[in-house]
Image (cartoon, rainbow, N blue to C red; front, side, top):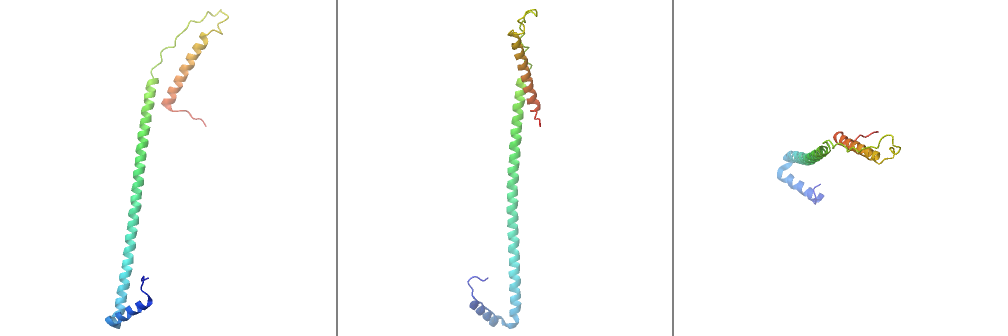
Length: 146
């Protein structure tokens, strides 16, 4: 409790205090010293509590700042993505030129079903369908089923 002061030194201090202050004043002095030590302990605990509160408040401010920075970077990313999507839809939004029409053989020809013009026309239609689907997904977002 008193560090390096042993029982012999304590007894010597009490005897000197008894001789200096007398038997009537010694209890009052002991009471005053006890109150002072109690107040000192209470004040030190209060200071310790305030320091801990400040540390926690500082940590909360740091976390708040980190969250705010994260939200701002997320907003910037979303805005950039939105701009990119807007540019992508502007590029694919103009109507594509009308597909070239090739002359088809007369219907009475037996080779009409296997003519090379039919697959080319079908390829143009499927290409237009793909472009339209991509444009819709860019505008509305991908459709996820499940």
